Image (tube, rainbow, N blue to C red; front, side, top):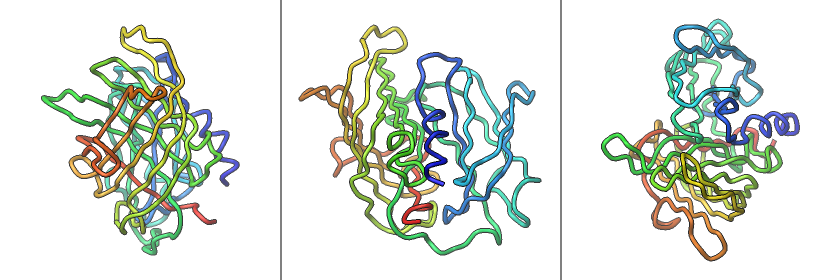
Length: 273
């Protein structure tokens, strides 16, 4: 399953520089992270259906070719859910305001869901904003680390941060998870809530910033405290060009920033399988 996911996630999680290629990923799973497959997800814009597709074995489906500034309504076709299963909501609306779009999460409940937390390592999905003041965020973040618990899928994942003040876009392209630790949570039900990771990537100017693309290194920590995570989950990202810090969220791994909106969600499904 992990090998099959690699090609899909490599294509759908890579960041883009043209509006026509902007992607959005949806994740449907139980509180314990068990995912049904397949489930049909429909995408609407302006009241009209744009496209529809089915989730994979991890409950993930991605839509690309979306437009920045456009508002989309994402709806799960409930007729394709497992018998007796329900959702926390059947539709969610999102406006593509950044090149770091969130992972849109739908929580599945019912007899289909097994309440035993899966053991072992972890992976991360997330998206939202940090340091939001008067409705304007300082940073937007979004992406996946070790998708499906695989270090090989999409080079270990794809993590994006946009600094709105400076007009810089960072993309972590080659990611290594250093550790999974912490305490048990129900967001989803797992036995760890902290993931530490590092890697390499690129940073470049956007939105009128002429800064050329350069190679960078980075370290990160995400803490999943609550569902949803706004005002509770924590994020630390430090991006370096050599010895120079070119982007940073949070003071340190020991003192990360609290996210303003969105969610950081740690998973253990597919680990040690």
